[in-house]
Length: 165
Image (cartoon, rainbow, N blue to C red; front, side, top):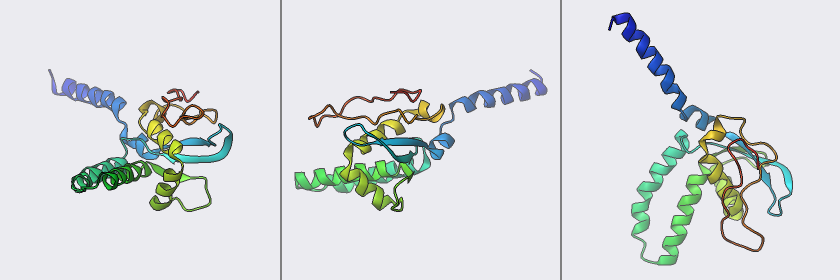
């Protein structure tokens, strides 16, 4: 193989590799429309990063470090609360911006997600669906995953990669 052929093959290889790159799109994020618990559409939204984003990967690494400390907690209830708080911190790292008047700080996002666990679940679901970051994102008709009426059990994801419910 000539030097020129090797160079052409390398360029083609790199071009093909870029089809698998997710980091930049994950860092950019997509807009997640928010719905009230009864399914009513609202004007509110969250800008959500993907699980391949730098911020989420850093939060995940920090969480793994803190897991050692959490595992040392003797009281089961306190340990469970610490684990739940750690999960909230990781999910909050996925939220870049929002439509609410309050500043979108990590502390504010954690508090919002704590009080709206259905939104926490929606953020987790959307952030893990890489295809959403490469298409048109989510349409305003896409619903946040919601448990059945009267149930506290999580329901499977209700969004499709094309952003339709």
